[in-house]
Length: 230
Image (cartoon, rainbow, N blue to C red; front, side, top):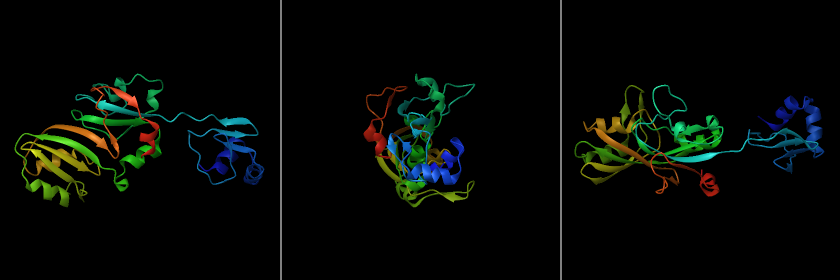
């Protein structure tokens, strides 16, 4: 919400009065005088008018989690353990998942209460690559490399996947970089070559790489540098 609209609603004053209050330097955002009417206000901002607090501002939270297999990428589920069940944090119900993983897929998962940040990370237009370590049942056909790079047409969704980079590491092992997250995308792409994915592990999302010190089920807050990279 824009600052002028927020003040008009919260302080119950007219838009004309809002302009005067801002011009007189009586409005502070995050401890600093604000003179911009169209500034976008977020739930994390602290807003004061004449020294009186109108909005305290929530603390933005960013967590890195090593998702284990057999865990649902959801905030609640009646039948299975969820990723939130792995976290011992106050107000964890305010967190949402930035980039879900399938039930038996392991690896990097990010949780936050900052919707703008998570959208920058996960939207295909942001071109933030997601890197997966893939193991397959049968030997990987070298033709996969070109097919993945070209993109694959999925008839059900009537779309063609974005170009993906596949690096074959061994007869049944590869590293795959995607820039989107379609439904069961990795399994479906290998399925075009009649090859079953037996294990899938996400190593990184954009510049954020899974901490090697995190055991499956472990988590930690992101550093200020990591948050700022997105």
